[in-house]
Image (tube, rainbow, N blue to C red; front, side, top):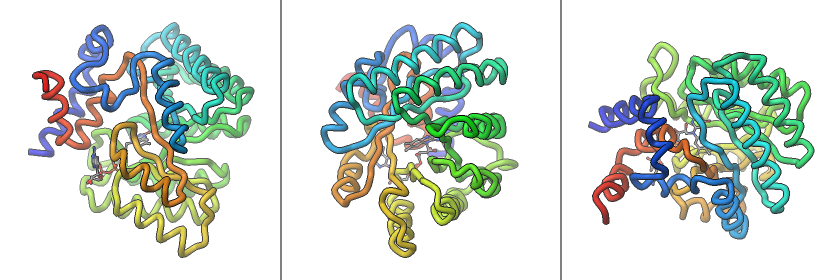
Length: 305
Ligand SMILES: Cc1cc2nc3c(=O)[nH]c(=O)nc-3n(C[C@H](O)[C@H](O)[C@H](O)COP(=O)(O)OP(=O)(O)OC[C@H]3O[C@@H](n4cnc5c(N)ncnc54)[C@H](O)[C@@H]3O)c2cc1C
């Protein structure tokens, strides 16, 4: 049953018509538990609260299915506004984004020029940018763009997904760029021809890539809510004397909030990924797919408390 629900939510998350409809009607169905709000100001308010609790942040202006140059330009302008907002309010936050929202599916030239415009502003305001990883079909293009940008800019990193067979090779391939990488299990529906279908294999590969990237001496963000992976990371860094400033834990806004504070109290750097914006639907569907138990919140949103 859980698998059926997971596939259903992943399928719904890819539905363009539903995405456009959801934008019109604003945050619904309990999505506010996982999304800071519709405006940049709402995310700034959330960052301020989290920073006051010694939690680090990365904000993500939600945007999917951008299919024309004008929309990609507007998304880039918005990201630049966000970077300025972070700096002008003295907030401790990075920015995460999806390359498709800056024009990846339109042309390589467009996404590169938008990224360079953003990175120039981010460098000026000293804000780090992480390129989220999308589905496997876009993985190579994302890595190629990261490599190109990394040769010019320091303040850029990306994400690798443990469920893909290719990721061990990508960790090795990217090592010479000394990238700051966020490592995750992976959130999209992928075919068994490209991704491990079994959770236990994903978990094993997750541990393997965390170890590789840390022992290569690179900065590593371990982004997970999974206690097994968190314990593994803690033991690994202890065993190899890896300092606390070479890695951090990351979790999503609204998920395992108590655990986030516990890790902070244990002295680890804990970063919260805070999404905001009108385009909340695809993100929300992926969160439901990860944990169908969250459907209870949706039902409350639909039928009242
Ligand atoms: C900061 C961050 C950034 C991410 N960026 C990307 C990205 O760029 N690309 C991408 O594909 N994916 C991304 N993801 C999503 C990621 O790939 C996974 O889909 C997601 O994190 C779920 O996997 P998990 O490691 O938390 O483990 P899971 O196996 O999903 O969960 C492990 C355990 O965590 C606990 N848990 C999970 N959810 C809850 C909850 N709501 N309440 C209480 N306990 C819970 C449960 O005990 C569960 O068994 C990101 C995740 C994070 C945290």
